[in-house]
Image (tube, rainbow, N blue to C red; front, side, top):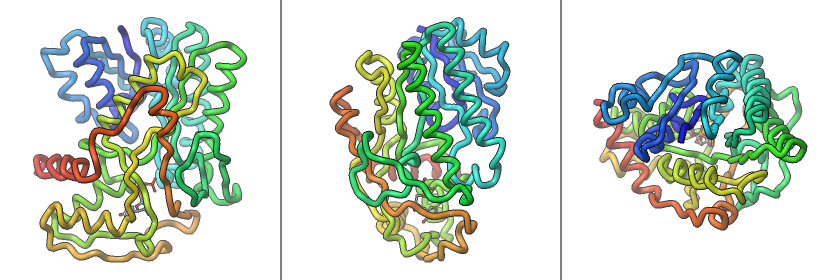
Length: 325
Ligand code: UDP
């Protein structure tokens, strides 16, 4: 099979590419390296094992000619290219919206032209300001005012979901929409704020662990390999077409507990420092207090259960940063 991955040099995309290559398929990646790096895929480019089966194009998803070629020759498409994360959107408000809205529309229309099955990456952010748990795919979404730019990320991804469902309902395009909750593992950078790589790097270098607010906000974490297994299973399942599915972990942990676990795992002398939200983020920002997915739908569709608990996830990230030195 030939698999096209937009954003395939990114954190999740590069792991996905590797799994398809290991399974003997051909992988085509298009990525403009805006928030990703060629280092994530260097081993795939250079491996003799995958030779001739891995193809990388450094380009944007707005290069219509290139995308026409790629969607035309590939059997399935994973659309992971996006402006990711609230902070990145706050820093690049207009270009991010264009990438997330126009970019996705473009991919959907090309997939429709060739009737290629496509998986659209959405995010737990679309639930907005919710404090109940677990969050189910049928739950409502609650946002603040449009004067607060932080909601534009959620709104842009929600629009992507509506568009994908529109193509499914009106044109019969086979689409699957996944909402990624916090996903972690090797190759994830802390540059865009992601908490686990940040805490692990701080702990390994003996710097203070920067817990925002009072640290009582909570999350669940999924190992990237589990997330990749889940989306590959959904792609293979015709019953997932036209569906929105949460991809996330099951073990809820407060950010303060997480900081303590990281210190313990790394035997670090780092101290925990509570940083008020006003100092950590711009005034446009508002943190989500709780974000816990229901994974019932994912489980019903794929039989999926996470294989790595928080302890194993942290160990893997610690090993990764230690090996990088
Ligand atoms: N966080 C923190 N210190 C950091 C980075 C993040 O306390 O150095 C908190 C952040 O405020 C949030 C949680 O960790 O409550 C998860 O943040 P991340 O950006 O990884 O993901 P998201 O907010 O999208 O769930």
